[in-house]
Length: 275
Image 1 (cartoon, one colour):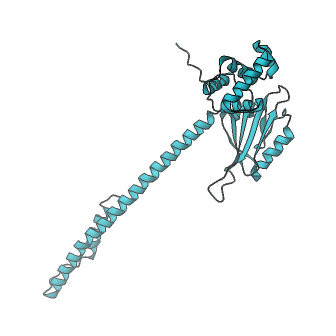
Image 2 (cartoon, rainbow, N blue to C red; image 1 turned 180 degrees about the vertical axis):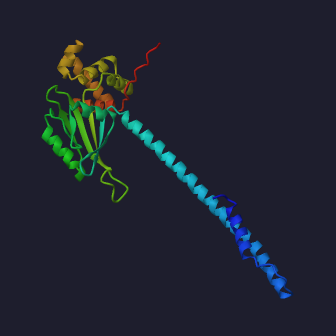
Image 3 (tube, rainbow, N blue to C red; image 1 turned 60 degrees about the vertical axis):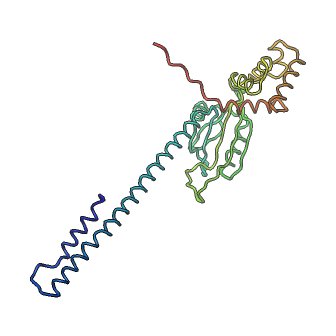
């Protein structure tokens, strides 16, 4: 409806109410003139009210449009950020069913190394050594019980840190399909480039960076010293220096920190072939 519609309606209404033309004398002419004047003066307030109402409706429509667009952009940015994580991320509904998985999580489900989906529910992979404990931890998430544990694939001995936390909702009664918990699955053996990241962040020496790289690859301190052709005493001294720079006190804490750091890395994009 246009802004001039109230004026048109008022004119039509006044025409319908206008008395039939007939010759009258004295008071009849005065009453007809007063009625015509009253009808004409009532058009202006009606037009103003209609115009103001239309402008308010138009303003609300624009506000709702831009609010929707902003939410759509935020949602797209959120999904892109989640998909760029190298750790698997899974949303769990209150019923225990899988609500969503990011790109890394979908790949982990496809490989079935540490997790798989059965009947729409996220469960441990068939080859996980800690399958019973892991399954119990996943079942406890809808009840609000968080967990953090190390899971190991029996065949290859590949390990990952599994973490699960409940998620609070602003709505008092969220939908059963809304995620009420999140699960992260981060491989313990990230690529060796994370050692370079750690060296840049904490000003590690070249020797310290190489030692961290060997520890990330799965060597213990003695094996790392042998691979790097240094004495065990030298390796211990370098490790102590790494602890001091990174603020970690144990080798396990250092590797856990490196694993978390690897989760922040975005996947490398392969360059397009030149023609």
